Image (tube, rainbow, N blue to C red; front, side, top):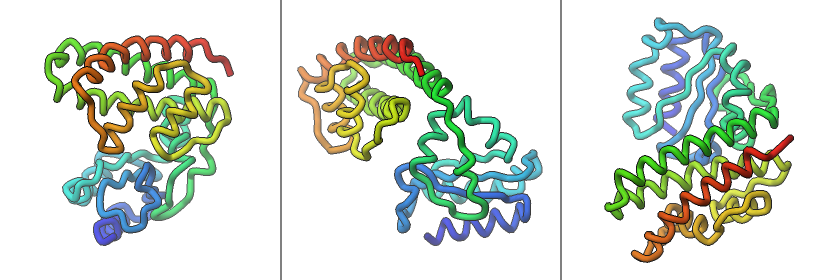
Length: 233
């Protein structure tokens, strides 16, 4: 990857020994020939405004090449964030690749209490956003389809965490994640599977399906929130 190699060289040039680690995470982490859409985490010894200024140009180039803006933190932030970012760190542990420097991932410790708590928080935020967007966009099929795409993306993150809470394996395909999660959460599997197939497998909704799903989803998220709230680990 020409863009990645150049980006790493620019980071090394501007940060020197202050650069501790660069790792790729997410669905593209282990795709060696991925051309873009690669999520990176950059860890430094110290991080201040001067450091950020020094790497601002290469970061802009990296993002201009259609990659997400990297997550940048110092080592203190890395070690102190296992609680508030339990979901994100659990995802990183499952799928990552060291691009440069030290492998900090084995140091990650996931506490199930914090993982469950973040699942509850994410569901509450999702329910609030869904209701607000429903109010504003329910008369537009295009906007509601976009909303459903975002909803299933968030739910899959939560479902992966629910599987980890129960020490279950986490499959790759969206429809399989939904199937596995249904062992621990009660929801309308037909509805969520349909949304996943539209989002990830190029399926589409009929008008009647869309109307039914829009209404059913509110109840599903509400019910899942109650179930996650009642979980104890």
